[in-house]
Image (cartoon, rainbow, N blue to C red; front, side, top):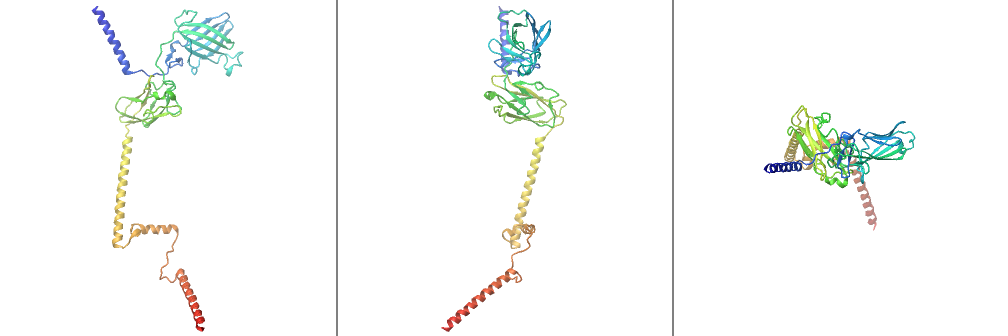
Amino acid sequence: MDAFSCHSWHQFFTITSIAVLVQVLGGASIVVPSSGCYALDNSSHIVDFTSLIGHLYEYEGKDSDLVVRFCKDVESRSQAGYIDFGRFDESNYLMSGSGRINFVQEFYKGDLINCERTYGKLGRTAQVNIICGSCLNVSCQGELGCICNITYESSCRVIVELAIPCEKQGGRVFEGFTLGFHPRSWEIVYNGMTQLGFEKPYQEFRFNTEQSQVALYMTAVASLSRLVQKPTIKIVPESGLEVRLSGSGAEGRPPTTLSPSVLIVDWTCEVARNTPYEVEFTIPVESYEPIEFTLTKMCDYPQNIEKESTRGWAAFGVLSFIILVTSTVFCCGGLIYKARFQNQHGLDALPGMTLLSACLQTVTGGTQSYPRADDHTSPFVVNQASWGKQRGAVAQGTWRQTEARYGTI
């Protein structure tokens, strides 16, 4: 009894410790599978069928047998030969179904014989409806499932019902989320899954020492964009590389398709290393698995970009201050000197005004000045004198005529 109690308590503490660790560490990020043989169910959880790729499922018919090679192709086999009903294309990955159908997979580009007029000239096609579990009326012999039923819609299209033991659900994917080096690209994260090449450090995907800034653009479905939280980083090793985040993405602004959020990464090499630094990014998403990816930075030599730029601006400010003070002292001294010793006042007393006036007169091309009052050679003075004489003569003649006229009286 005591041994049983000790064993029970040991199991209890083990389970409790695992639960606490899961709560503390949180969920792991979701990396896109290396093969295209995966699907997202109706609850956005990922289901990976990579282990079933190429597995052969055969259905025996009267005239021909139908063979499904999982995530490969669909064929009709008979004594006359093989007829291809479509091949697997990674762009047409498995889709979630409805009702008792869990997933649906389409196969296109089969044989064109007698099917040249099919839609889009895709030839023969097949649709495989996947059921997680067993068939309704047929018991499968193998452990990996079997074909329950087939239906020929025409000689160019067949519907296959396939029952398989589905893999365990993975993490919940934040569908519609993208992250890349351009507002309309998704090199790093596509549809909520980290792309190959950024899920862990790679020598081929690294940034050189000269590139001190990287801009990352995030987009998400507008109705779910508020679930995206502020990103965090972890640097390996912790010292030697300074990383700062800025931009709307760092502030936690919800990213949308029409208005992407930008996450600006400024990193400066403080210590040179032969191997690149690793910067692990984590973007938490409420109710979903976090978005995680890794960028690597090579540091061939230490950088002090910010310090050098700050030092340059400081030198420029000190030099500008010295020039300003020197010019002020010079202007004040010249003004006092001209006002006291040269009896100049107003603008004429400012240093350099004489030189400035001469330069302006030279530029405008004018050499004339205002005439002096004692300059008898000036045409203005002559005209003024003649006008004065003329006026005097007229006045004198008028006086004489008036005097003669009234003299007779």
